Amino acid sequence: MNEQKTGTGASVGQGNHRTGTGRVWAQVLLTLFVLALGVAVLTAFLKLRKAPQRSEQDVLAPLVQVRALETDDIQMVIQGYGSVSPKVKVDIIPEVAGKVMFVHSELKAGGIVPANEKIVGIDPRDYELAVQQAAAAVAEAQVRLDTEVAEADVARREWRQLHPETEPSSPLVLREPQIRQAQAGLASAKAQLATAELKLERTTISLPFDVLIASESVDLGQYVGLGQPLATAYGIDAFEVEVPLEDDDLAWFDVHQTSISLRNGPAGDDRVPVTLQADLGGSAHTWAGHVTRTTGQVDRMSRMVPVVVEVPRPLDASAGKLPLFPGTFVKVLIAGKTLKNAVAVPRDAIRDRNIVWLVNDGRLHITPLDIVRADDEFAYVISGVADGALIVTSTLDAVVDQMAVRIPPKSDEEELADSVAPVANPTGSK
Image (cartoon, rainbow, N blue to C red):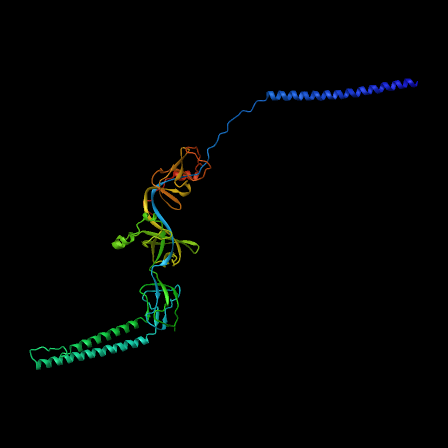
């Protein structure tokens, strides 16, 4: 019994072991099949897939900003800077001493005193007495002369009675030396009277032109001495500006044209016009003037030539214009000669002193220019650039002559402006 049970149990254990091993192999085979199937599918996909088509990408030409140039008659403007100074500066100094009895109400810094008005009055009483004394001396000298002349007439008649048809051998007989002495005394007395009258006249101080008072140091009751400065005044008929210019700038206007114009008279007044600019009161203001002369020498330090510009009636505040005071720093624009058929090239479009980039038919052309003159904004040329040429104003990293470039298309507003031609106004009305 027991042996039979034992044999049966061993058979059952062996069957279970075989069943588990079969399942493992089945799973391995299934996994291998799936992997093989996947590899087969992937291989078939790779064989059937089409290779991507290769296409070369177009390289775009660089985009540049351009500006059209125009040929025109351009007047050259010579630019400089300087400070306004008075053309006439006067120190008011008394020519006689005395106590100040009168001071003009405008005798103060910034005051304006009209021409020939009394500015300062000195006590005249001492000088009036001196005039009276000198006048009395003239009257006394005149009496002395009259007396000598009368005595000479008496002496002449007596000589003729005593010595008819003969002339006296000595001039003392007819009192000729005494008469000359009396005449000299009269002339001296008259000169002293004129001196006294002149001193009396000088107790009143005035100027023959309108002045702006720059400073003053006098008050009522103050005793002033001979030659003591009382005030400083500027003539306001004209102010001047000394503008240092390069010698090359002098070739663009005739600095001697003003003197020639003044010699020819008002009808030939073609002085070189000048515009002065300054920022005052938060806004820009301008004044008109003209070139008068040079200082006649070259500055030793800067090697520049100072040109003097005159501004007439600088304190005239009519038409809302601000007065131009001495000391104002101004920008000076001198109207020079006119270049015929010239082109103004922007300075920021010039490379390497005289090279520009022009665009024609989508190609960039490196072009040298023969620059006639240049200022802060433009360089001016009269050849080498055609009317309407497109000049490159932007920058490029690398530039080759004849390289292809693109320009931005015009906006609708620009096309409309180009298509509409300006209409002439025959009536001249605004």
